[in-house]
Length: 67
Image 1: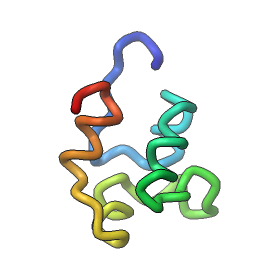
Image 2: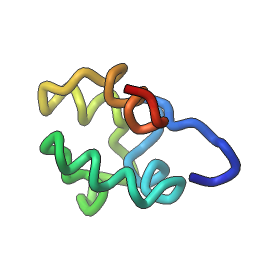
Image 3: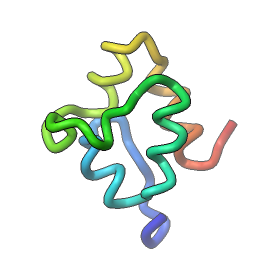
Image 4: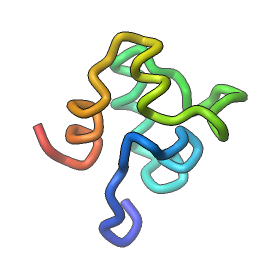
């Protein structure tokens, strides 16, 4: 992850992938294959998580190294 910057639920999937390429694996494990989607530059983590029935707050915590 770049310079301790935290992932937030208002970031787009493209921003998240730029910040932390490893996040793609964790997203895919939840059915969120958004890193390679054409909408990645526009869709936020919160919106994508909601569309796939994933708790955005829990996902953000996990992506930032929490449990």
